[in-house]
Amino acid sequence: MSQLLVDDGRFGARRVLLQLRPVWHIFLPYGLLSILFMLAVQLYGPFLRSMVKCATKTEPTIFTGSAHCGDANLVLSVAQAREGRLVAMKLLVHAFAGPVLALLADSIGRRPVLLLGLAGFTVAFCIFASVAGLPVLHGSPSLMSLSFLVEGCTSAFDVVFLSVLADLAKTTTERVTCFSVLYGVGALGHAIAIYLSAGILRWQLQNYAAVWLAMSIGMACVMLLVMVCVGETLPSAQAKSRPQKLTLPRLMTSTAVQMRYLVSNRFLQIWLTAVLFKSLAAGLGSIYASFTLAAYDWKPGDWQAVTWPFEMISMGSLSFLGPLAGRKRPELVISFTSVSGILIHLAQIFAPFAPFALVGPHLSAGFLAFARPVSAAYLSSIFSASQQAKVQALAHLVHDFGISVSMATFSGPWLFRPHLQGWDAARPFLLAALLSTIGNSMKLALVQRMLRTQTGSKPQVEMMTMPELPVSPKADSAELTEC
Image (tube, rainbow, N blue to C red; front, side, top):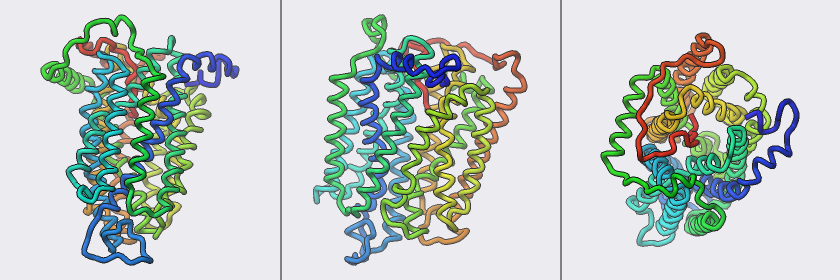
């Protein structure tokens, strides 16, 4: 990543601009998509709170988040549990659908899979608007579940956009530059979305039909922009060849090969186990906004207003700390971020007693964004080109599975109870700290062992050659996921 700003010890801005000239048209739709995607994530909770009904009548002077229930704690508890279940279902479906969509992107092309995802989210937002605006459909659990299911089945945005950039970039240096800029554009889009969500929540809406309708129109506009500006980038030798039919036996064969590889490679076993424990702790973030409403008596939108700089910090970390991290040994960078991750979760144990114990560590985590490309590049460097897609697919599957289980766990009433105070309210943070400590300690021990056993500059890892599947003709496509 050091090539982003530095070229042989000198700033190479002109060279960077030349590298980015062929791909500028990719960043605009990705940036707009990042805004809409993160805005939807921020509005899931408030939207579900507006759907809660109970026998307690509302009072004009008290805003509970729902026009149909006057018990604020009940609204928070019920909506948080629903959000945890629905988002967990979405991520679990995406964990299995993501690799399939990646295989489709490598066989039939990038553009159809990207348009499928945009169409899926447009439909999902329209369903949200219908559930919120039409009295006959108001709060329909089946339709809300369908919306999240559609999102999980069709979302493969990062994989496809990274693959598009990998197709257009000619060299490894250009790919690193393009990927880094894409990460930065995504972080900027997320920051804008969080800032917008803070303003929307300050309105204290009790019906989100107009918001979802506007977002569905926005997503449809992004789809039209992609149709006009983003052409098919799959190499012509593959695009012109007749794609082989994607069948259930072929997918089962792919899964069997990946699982056999997982069992046989000790390094990958430990790495993915660490990823699983860290993702199991990550679900704590799903209750942050609801926790501040219950524990600190904050107003809707206050959490987003306080923490929206997180994405700007992440973008700055990628842009400025990234080049420095790229010059260091990746084992040292991963070790530093592993220790930092443990300390951040330990500090959040005291969140029930002071807002700073929640906000401070959360913002501090943004500074660690520079390690994302380093970690992804390190995992890629361990394995041969013919194994990249399989390894990334497994990492993707484990990460999303862990997140889905984690969100359902932390959002459930057995951990999140709005009326609890003091150490009783710290139970979710204690569990997250334990899981994070286990995961980060495993990754720390693994990379330190690799550092000690290296010979020269190439890690000594037991390799295994995997047979190529004809359904995925491009074995070394850039399917980078957050690991």
